Length: 318
Image 1 (tube, one colour):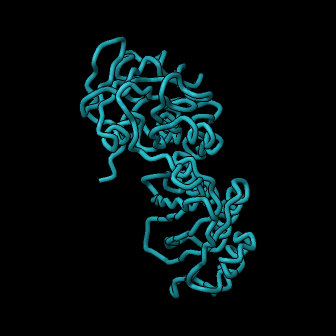
Image 2: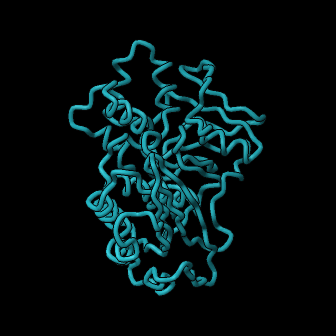
């Protein structure tokens, strides 16, 4: 795990102190003393690789606690593996420490990273550390195993399939609104959903046996369901009246003067990190049916049976 020579202090000693314990003794990590790692093959399984980056002021608030930054970084990457029905086992970290991000902040980041890597059974295999004038930026490359030829892709949905989503939708977007002071969040539950999403790794077996296509809901339900439609060469009809909502989201919805606009906001806000998928027939346990796969090439959104125009279907990265 090479380090930037401009970092404060002895960067190699810091890597050994902060990050070597996070390897879990994985032999291919070589105690982070090399500039590469070896991933042994697991016969009968495919290696699934994904990578997500997070940037201060974009994916988390300026001034966020370093341990929470690290934990969100782990979770958003594992969410991608969850949607692929993969079992995570290892990762590579790249982090750019900004000016003013001192030893205490780096230690807190490493502590948060270690907490969640241990919680999800993932070993740190290598990476890189550099310095930057800002903002804070970090990325994780996450590795997982899935039985050969069983990874659930975005492509594969067929006309007549049911579109279903896990958990509840809209909490992540409302959580960001709570952090900015736009809406009330007395117990901090919504903010917690935004700060520390839960990757739905427990859905692995259901996805492997039932899902024809899947994606994690990071950019917004409408946008991410649309990715399935595009990859599969089909259209979708989504019924926002069927959205699964938490008590907090339903309470917010009940207080909005324009119910249609509010439902669209919940379905396009992003940061939910649930799984949307296409299945035949009724959805599996822990999923809610919210629409159907139809012929065509567009995503049709309905509220109270009427078509609703959705200009911004979710977060746009560019």
